[in-house]
Image (tube, rainbow, N blue to C red; front, side, top):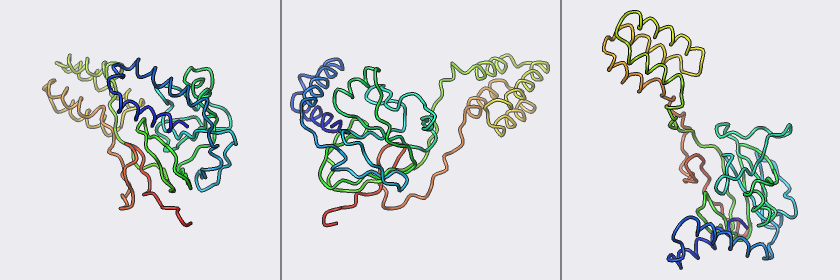
Length: 266
């Protein structure tokens, strides 16, 4: 259902670009197409989709019309599909190499979720998600719709990448930089070394702090220290990339999927 709405919107916009002048108009058209789908008869996913999470078959609820696989706590412009944490499920996180699988019962349910008055139907969590379909269905990946033919798709963690942190909000960063800018005598140098020792107990990498210590003790140019600081204090370790098999293809920026396996004749 979700993929069908997204594909219909995509095709309608391509045929009538003059009707899509800004994002608010786009929202209106998307809502209209979604409302139309609310009165459409849909085949329940339980009849066309086989879901496995970490190798375990998962029985889908009969009234489920859309299946969403998440890596972040945001969907469709900011809606929280997974909802608040509960005792049975693990807390959703973007860096735990886990995926959340959530179901939607229809267009009205999707509208409730996006309005913040409901949440999706939790189906499961896992490191490897496998979806098998026997008939062609509509799907979307981060807003890019397409028709998925009879296939089996495996989604799993591929790698992690460094991201940029807003340094203005980082009190440790601002304090360190202020000390470096005022660094012109032995006393301030000692204060800076003491501050670095405090940071060792915080969330900065020890090797970076040790490197800064050595620089402070041996470099007299504060401008040079500022450059070193900018380069080192917010550096993240390089991602440990696993071997990339030839049969993998791009799925999105963080996950990879196996090439489709044709199910015709199986």
